[in-house]
Amino acid sequence: MAEPTVKINLDNPTEVARETLHRLAMRRIAPTPDNYQTLYEEIVGKPAPGAGTATAASVLAELASDLQTHFPALSAQLASLNKAIGKGDWRQCSWQFSEIALQLKPQPAKPKLTDVADHAQDDTAAQLRDLLAKTLEFGVVPQLPHNPRLSEKTQHLAAAVREANSATTLRDAAAGLKSLWVSIELQASDARDQQETLKRILLLLVENIGELLDDDTWLRGQLDMVQEVVAGPLRIQSLQEAEKRLKEVIYKQGMVKHGLREATATLKATMTTFVSRLSDTLAANDEYQDKISIHVERIKRTEDVLELNRILESLLQETRTAQADNRRAHDQLVHERDAAVQAEARILQLETELAQMSTLVREDPLTRSLNRRGLDDEFAREASRADRYNAPFCIAVLDIDNFKALNDKRGHQTGDDALIHLVKVAKEELRLTDHIARMGGEEFLILLPDTPLDEAAKIITRLQRSLTKKYFLDNNEKVLITFSAGVAERIAGESQEASIGRADGAMYEAKHSGKNRVCLAPDAPEQAT
Image (cartoon, rainbow, N blue to C red; front, side, top):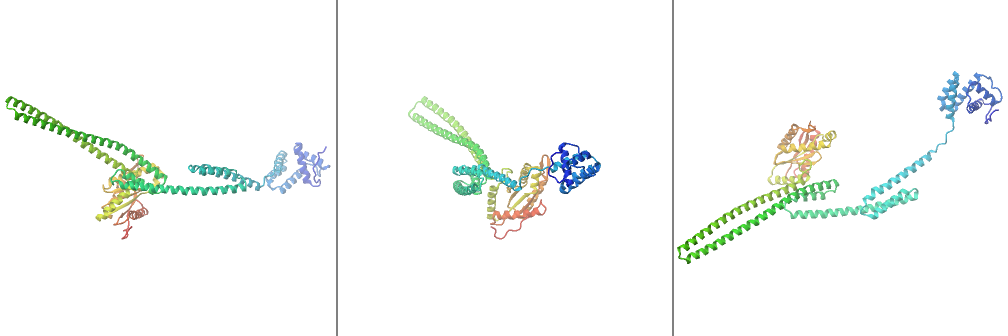
């Protein structure tokens, strides 16, 4: 019995062939020419024209051609099907038809691109809202520890932003954000004003204390450092560095001051003993004088020779006792004097150590050369002396060549060691009157008082040669360190900035001329400021 057929045009061989293939698949019958012919006749109700294998093959070929026309994407599978039909390989034909059927099977409708885009936009908006809320919670709230009102307002706003999923709620959240930024800006302005006011108060206090101190007091260096830090922009790095160095100096000075207090106490005790011994000596002398007076009176009143002998014997005994007491007092006074001298020397030594501790704030902690504060002090002192005595005064700006490459290749620790090596060699080669200061990074400045320009250039060139001879070792490997330098001679009245600027320009000229060179700065204008 024939299966119910779909509505097809029986006069169209292509539709009949398609229905035939469908029934072969439904009945799981091998698509041989005989089976195909049988089902074909069953569908149309009459024998297929020119029944036989050739007719079935031609119909299949026609079906493949029709599919090629309507489904160009199946060209590869249809080409394989035509080959299988030509060879009569019906197993291969069956497999190819299965593949084609899978390709022709209707696919579930894909969502519209607009729907996908809208969904993606919704996800992105949700992520952005959550990110903004977390920024408020974890980025803004911790910055408001001293303003509970603003902190609570920020937390409420974060919750509102996270729940804002409509145009109205988004507008409300945006308005809240604007209000929050205004409030934070007002608070930041107040905080800046408070900070500036505190800085001015601290500067006034430091300056007032400085006016009350002698120039050589051991507190001077610490006050100068605090004043320098407060006067400049308050950066956390500079504050931490100043705190670290002040703690180190205060700790060392505390140890020295303890010894100073002990030495002072020793001196006071020695002086007290000295005065006491001197008083005892004077008292003993007074007592001796009184006894002498008594013996004199006794001599005047007696005429007995035996009594006179006894008086004389007593007088000699008193004299010998007084002499022994005087010698003993003398020895004790000499001992106390020596102890006082030693205590005074110890006090002077400890005071000198305190002053030296204070100068630590003028040194670069890495290289032990002068820092910017020390440079400013020495430059002012040497410039004043040069102007007073009309003496030549030169400066040289040094910059290590290829320092960044050294850091990148061998590490920052090696770079730090190279800076220390340069300062060590410079201190060995320079004169006692010269000073080297670190201006920052790999740049240094050398002060050369009482030195004309040509002689200063020779000194720096000699330092270059010494640096190439005294190799820098990195893990027992010799590393050549060179520098480029610019030398300038300061004229009377020229400011520190102007002198350094001219030397710095000459240093850059040495860099551009091939490095490891010394260039001289041009003369300064007649009136430099």
